Image (cartoon, rainbow, N blue to C red; front, side, top):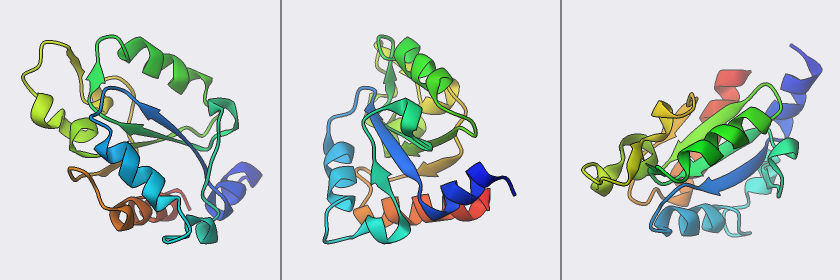
Length: 138
């Protein structure tokens, strides 16, 4: 196993991007980062730059305006690139499935490694999804 993958399994740094969500998933993601759920025990840390991140957490169905930006963020991420689709909208466009403004779910824009369904997903489900992703990488 490479040094980068070993570091990733011990301390994954995540970068969050909202591509057109109603903000419920964002609130739950921030709730998962609070001391109540203590994701730092897994080494999970929210970073401010995609260039420092190990995983990209995407919430919301991808709007036409956000699609090129999401693709650009994905290309700027260091390898190995991991993408987490968080919430029903990110997984399948959710309630916006017939919207004219939607470019699609996240997996039609960039490859997705793990899906966390729910509207909104509970913090426990988000933590479980990240831990399963780390086991999948290891």
